Image (tube, rainbow over all chains, first blue to last red; front, top):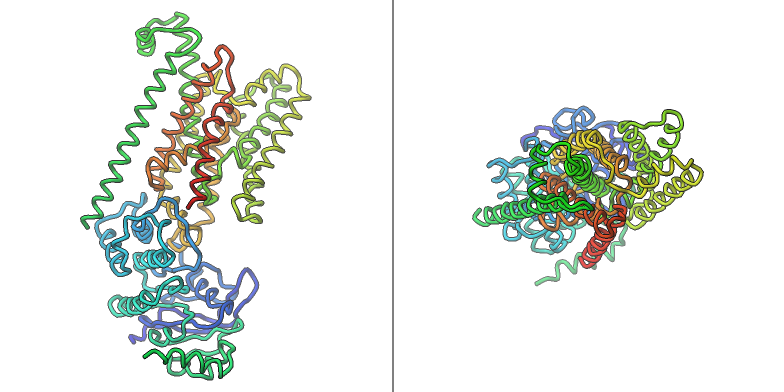
Length: 258
Length: 343
């Protein structure tokens, strides 16, 4: 860890409008860290991620990106630093996979959005990283949900952010691509020093990839720590509201693969 | 890398073909249009007149004062309607949005009718600018109302129904005005309120041309954020678009365009939906920098063609332009809906 702080949440309350969903969050994330939010549906994981990427305005407090408060950054400045993968479905008309990924270059292209050679290289690399080069000329609407998810991921990578925010990046993906995603994220961190914030449903995947895990439950952050500290039976039962017996069944089913 | 260049090349070829065809269609319709009418004028004479000869003859005034301004107006306003539709579709993220179905044209029509009746009483004349201003106000008020409704109703069917209802209300209000207007006003209003390109002066043409050119150019220059909005508001925001400001710009530009059309030619139906759809289907792309000029050209051709039919199909009686655009436009919209459902 380089120890350089890139994200700081200072007494942050997130929510919609004036309604606070999770209050008084304090957190500091270093460059190159991979931080995962886990917890049941509706706990507020998305709300936190969206506030950090300024899709939502903070209710109280502020988010500091590389020392600057979000409210002082223009949307353009922010777009060169943070890119986000949202859970919402997009339905672009007559756009090919490549068109969608090229949209990630938006902050860097000139007034009419023409791509330079460097932009095309970045797009090419993003396509290759997400293994969609072979479908790059197909129309986005024709793809399966899993393919679409990889295209949208490639778009966020093409935006060349310092901070990557991924809201449930594994949704619609089958197990092969889930595992590939994890190694991809590690590579992005190692080669580009990207800081990555994501939310996951699969705590077992969170364990493999994260430097730190944040447990969000009932509109509250109940625990923050390394995977070793977090992923024990007691925390999991509490986090997901499951009985110890049921957890055993789940864990055994995972281990039962020969 | 190889594959990329072939795709890009294929697209460029397609653009080239489509634009060439549209330009060719434009000139063919232009010539046929000048050449057709109650008074037949031989082609050689037309060419002579267009190059400035034979001044003072009746053929000269028919071509120079009647047919040509009407044609140019049909081209300009047809293009304007199509671009206006395209901008609205971007705004709502919905290909069925257009100035006519959303009731915006009818709102503009009502404002113009009101303006005409009252100003004619006082001043006995109405300037083009005044008409545009009234139409713009009417368009903006209706759009504002549609926006309010669209916050509550997210699905396209609901939005559409709301728009159609607003259209009906405005039309009813206009009819009400007409019923109680004086005969002299009705003569003025009636032809206009049904929609027509007839009776255009060069003054009208130059005013419409300057407004439309300005707004179309502006929307072309906004191609980049328009494209970004294709991925939805939230992604556009994350790419650095100031969505709030940009959406206001979009709706203003679209309203000015459809207001200009309504001020001069009355409400014209379906062009704003059918033409952008046709253009995108031909170009197989949604990039605004290509679609905006394409849809303008296509709209010009479409409206010139429809006006030709309106003029000639039952000559000497003229159809109103909306009758013709509906006959051709509405089936295109139906095809579009069926194709979308199949997806």
